[in-house]
Image 1 (cartoon, rainbow, N blue to C red):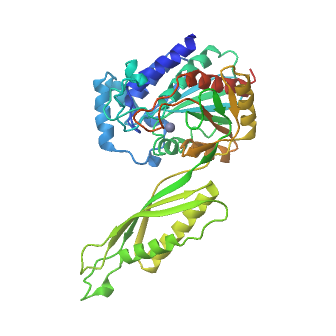
Image 2 (image 1 turned 180 degrees about the horizontal axis):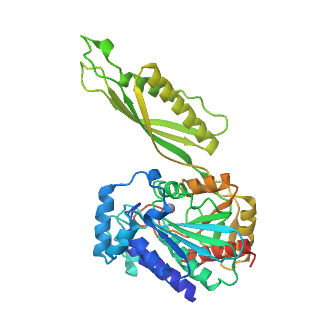
Image 3 (image 1 turned 90 degrees about the vertical axis):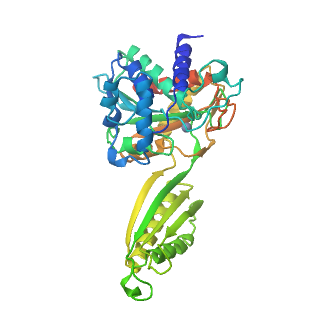
Length: 423
Ligand SMILES: [Zn+2]
């Protein structure tokens, strides 16, 4: 086994043993920091890599308890203090030679899933099963992080040959599409000329690399509050402002948003509540909305119509409206230049048995948020899939992926750096 393969497996297994869910990756961040601190990278940590105003769905209690767990597991107090309650690492390698800025993103979070006790499950067989209750790397982000760490080592060994700037982003909270939003809003990646990210497994088997996948689901979630004024329904109903009436009107109109000819769409008001009691004009109402579109364009159309309906109904019933945006994920359109680069890299790699151009991803990916922003600033982006045989579907307790994908992933990213750097 080559030294690279050994190192990739070692990192992957260490990370698999101590998984942490979105926004609580304190021990993982410490692990990454320890691997990078002796290498010639400028490291930004925790709160430094994100815009706090764009942080969504972060459970304070969970953050507190996982901080405590990390301390118990030996993460130094001073380090936790530096992170300032947030997680993730941005490692910048500056060559001081003119050249492009290339950002590579690796997500680091795990899922709230109890890992299987099946003795044949490789982490059980080899003793690297999750030691955190109800938490497991069941999507393969331990693979991604391991690849990023070994790549960092390779970059520092190649430093004389490289030019421009390489930024390795170890991103927190991919699950739930939360981390990328806050990180990209920091503006720290706006200088990117190139961006690359990947996922192991998904629809591809070991040895297959999907260089231009499609079928990334777009979606937007809203929580909506209508606020009116309560009044006695018999003695002075005209003094009230009926928030529930506004919400119900909006509910009906939302069902009737015209379908788009540009692609498939979904809309669901999954929750609607309001009012206080029989004889009171309802002064409050609440709804939860889920929008999906086949493309960003279709999703944007649904978002626009939904906002118009909500504003219109609130105005017509003279109630106040507040819309909490829980975030949007987009579809991904790879830039042809990078698809060509990756095709060349994959075709020349002896570990790659099949180079697939198009294949249906069939899921959401929060890297799409970073990609959208970088492409708007004229940077070029690629998202690809590193095939891996799986024992079960992603996000299942008996999920495991073929570790052969580690080296293939490493080779793909390494090849992309070489192509972009012309070395
Ligand atoms: Zn994933």
